Length: 606
Image (cartoon, rainbow, N blue to C red; front, side, top):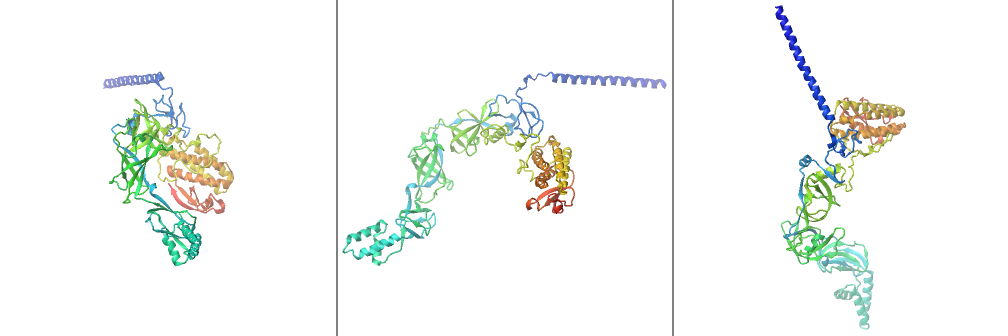
């Protein structure tokens, strides 16, 4: 029995020794393997690594530095920027294949128009036929007693009464007529001279005979329309005094109108007087009007680089109204389009003053560059290009705004930034600040956190650091409640120190990061302003801004504590202001002892 026990013990010891040998020998092997990997890493040849490696910030990709360090905006560690972009020009941008696929970016090769001479489309407007326009003037001076036509758009026929005028000159001339008529037998020459004088004022023989027949002076004289048409402008009002020859109305004959188009330089050779134009309008999409080119302007507009092309349209049915947009299609058998560059409309980004496209400059790499172009005519979904592109250029035809956004982030030339340079982020004020500089509270923020009510999830460690800032804020508030400017100044400095200890790297979410960047900037500015003075009135003015952004910070991130949002309607010259408190009882920091209990609780933040 004892022998068996001894054998069992010896066997157990043997097994233990063997197990230990294998375990420790494996551990040593593992350590050796780790050491070998470490040595391989240390001895790795970095010669293939780009000497121009750039470093960027994951939250602020516009930051590019030649060496590792901290982001000058948010202080986060810089990470290596994408390699492979060396050798690019100052305005070229390189994107990854993954980014191209995600944004569905497509490119096309620029082609030219064929010589089949299909058609040319021009855009234009309907205008009045200036050859048929007239101005209705008065032939004698006087005062307008009545306007019989008093609104634009009214149609008038030739001979229609337009206005009535009192004219002292005509009254005197009528008296001369009556006097001369009484002695026309003895002085016929004088009588005829007086009649001719009245005719110069456009009085008819019937009107003159009627004056003689009645034997009485007529005080008010009518003005009749000399042409038929539509009143387009009334140039006087009742009671106005007018001079001889002064215009009263503008009248347009709209039985015929002009269709006026703009043609670009490269289209002029295809346009000649007498060519047929098919014209369509938005008002009558199913109806086509036919006209012939009646005039091609011999002068080029140097601003728009276009010439005016005009066609006359019959408008007896009054369908076409001046101001209507129209499109003209000219069919020409010999249109010289073989050298015209044509691109899809989706490739063009238009800023109002400039038209830009993105050109792929490297056929083997996703490298792009913005290029300004001069647009010619549009034909449905295509543009003709006057300058800026050549046949064979490869351009982005889908996803242009994505490429442009990438260019903006990298500080390259873009649609809204023709000169290039880094995109403004709203935090640039931090970059030029030196230690000890004072910051004034800003009236606007880069991120509108003031309207956000939804809580953003952050780590408990960040909440703990924010709580230290909040507690310092409460100390500032209590000092103002006690009318103690020196204490408020001291506690504001403590709040600045607590703010500096908040680790922004704890915020992994970009939304949280951006909101805290703005809130931190405002809290720092306001606490610095309170700490820079011991005058309690100035401190209370700055405390209003400090409280507004502290409320935003507590609402967005929380401090794991119940907080009361208090409000005083009389603060800030009766505009009202808020503050945070740990107790429900109102103790007003804006007035202190003078109005300690002025205010109300507006809500709580959990």
